[in-house]
Length: 82
Image (cartoon, rainbow, N blue to C red; front, side, top):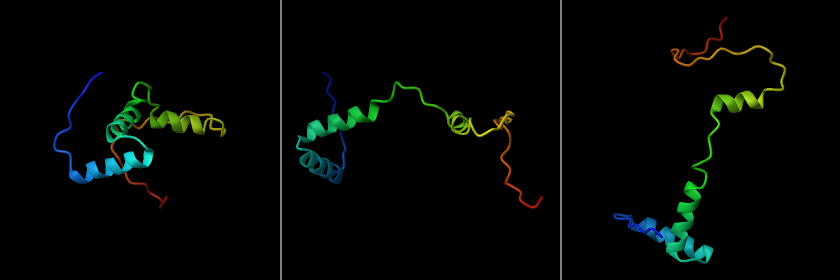
């Protein structure tokens, strides 16, 4: 198993970690291990980009034409006076 040391950790962060460990019935060291496991557990999964998620959400709404990509275009404010 690997080991590493965290230097310059603020005292209040250490105190909060200790309280959190007590609430979960574990040692502070085990609590930190669990936090680190949870932080990296989804790292290997691919992330669906925002545009793809929006397209999937509205795919069954009846829109039949493709919307143009705006990648690389200058940002313009919306105009509502037309």
